[in-house]
Image (cartoon, rainbow, N blue to C red; front, side, top):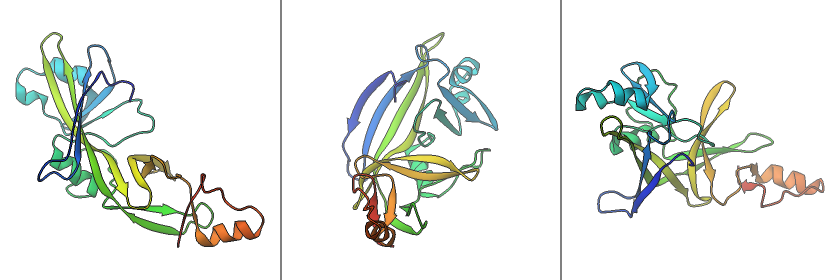
Length: 207
């Protein structure tokens, strides 16, 4: 994430919190027009929120997100509990966005026949991002989002999303496992046809 000013620290899981907390900080004084905030049915840049705020309560928000992230990541929630709830599909915010969630498992699809298979997901890291300004007055907002998940079969990966048939779909981009999939039946058919799939290119699963 190139727009982040500082990586503050990474906190290992503690009692009651079964995942790592990754803390980051972004200054909009040096990285302008990178954060969009949703508040009371309106959407604007974080700089506008800071400028218009007259008291601490004016800095509340329903969510914010980073522009120009590639690949796109989840939006930031106002609290850790909300971030986890949103990710798992509970208590979804109703603030005008097309909301998606990942749940506690992800569905992968065969690239040929579209057969699906579900993989259980475990949250392994949550990001805590502080967006701050010092001009003209020091102000900040803090957001939370699930930053990393893990599957026993594919290892760790980052939640993302893509547009399919005009709808946003929740996906996971795996760190090491291939992000293209074949069911075992289609893999055998390709092998029988003299075109065995490269295991570095495809994750093969039992449909």
